[in-house]
Image 1 (cartoon, rainbow, N blue to C red):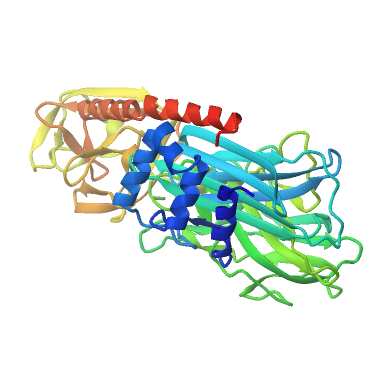
Image 2: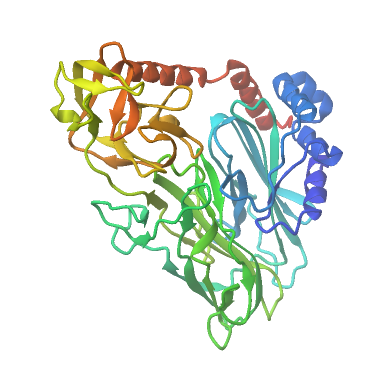
Amino acid sequence: MNRHSELLKEIVETKKASRYRFFELDLRDPLHRECVMSRFGGKDLLASRYPSLNSLLLETLANPPEIQGENPEGFCAAASVIDLAYDETNQFIYATGDMTPKGVAERLYVSMEVHEGNELIARSSSFCDKSEYTKLKASSSPRPKSHSNSQVMYRVYVEAIWEPRGSNILRSMIAYSEYEGTLDDLVEKVYIIDPVHKVTPPNSPIVVSYSRDRPDVVDYRYDETRDANDNEKVYLDVNGYLKLKNNYTVFDACNIGAILKCPPFGAILYLGTHEYGDKKSDKVVVYPNNAEKTEIGWSLNVHWDTAIPDSVKFGDRCHDFEFSFDYRCEEDMKLHKLLVTSIEVPGGWDIPAHAEIISKIQLYWGCLTEDTEVTMADGSKLLISEIAEGCYVRTPDGGSARVREVVRGTEPTVYVLRMMNDLEVKATKSHPFRSEHDFISVAELNSHSSLMTDEGLSLVRYCYPTEYSGNVYNLELEGADSFFANGIVSGTNAIQALMENRSIEMLTEAQPNPVVQAETERLREDFANGLI
């Protein structure tokens, strides 16, 4: 076992209490720091061959970031060992894993190791820049499956090292999975009750709606419920059971968890109760499903005890789903796995009996609104579609301005924007609204955004996209840059053009960094050549 593998094992030994079996490293810790440096060949090679990466490490040590906790609410970074299994057809051991950073990573370097005892039997790496998600797979050379009474320990490590965009710091995370003895699969069949397609077609995502009216079909509908920051709380039914083969009987279960992965935002963890017991209850979510204990049932709390950060922004996101737990049977007292996931096994590999592949989860939230009304100079309201050149509208300074031009267009998608004071308007993604200090586009809104209204400054409650088949409008004014749209201060067409230019500049700034690209390519070559 090389020094890097030894460090992975040593660090994991101190973190086994972690519920989700992944944790962020603290690079101020000498052991953690050595682990990262050894991933790139050690301190000297890191400094000489990967200077940009080394500079990031030094900057991180000088300005250490806050480390992500074990049970973070909302979006988080999440590394995962998805599965470890024996492929009976091809007669090899394989593992799959992934990494979902919080936000886009300027660079994302992820590696996976599979150990049988002290022998490294499989290894893979991914070196990417401008990445929001990475999936890995690794397989051993052909080998016989270990005997059921074997005491060998199988260990899988996923190590992620990344630079969050715009941070100028380095972060590192380890995910792990350990199984003692055989890789025998004790599952005869997995039965999924929730989440499943109820009305949507099988080849589409499973649709979940939080009190949002939609013209198409919905599989699950929950009441819209907001937290103290007015973010949408996460609700999702997760129910099912498995049948053990050969009359094996369950003894207990552990490492119970569920994750929704939504690049580029991050991952959302189920933070509800996660206990095993003899009978289902408010706390017990995994339990024997029959008197003989030859079946294992699960029923997670429908409320995940977390919320979607900045869900005032919009509500139409597709998520990968993952639910798993480990269990032991009376007959062998070794850990075995149950996995329900939307992340498919690589083509050509056997899907193990303990794994069930389901569709992705599509989440929607929000509600609908009415047509836009503009406040005229005399205080009356007129639909924007009825305004003509020469009309006078009221301006936020208490005066009025003449309409020089009415700009009309079409847009397949508009955003429903609702304020805490219950004012509501529909607008395109680039449409500007007046904040306390500047104009801000719909695309830039978050849960802390406040906009000017005819009732004063108000926080944004939510904003989400919806299909639209009508015309969209904006105004050009003489001597003014804004007017009241459904009581909310709206920028003119000239301001909207400035906002769109600003968005283009932001995209330009996000173009690949040639230094990072060159170093990433060097890492790929060095890994392929066995240097790191």
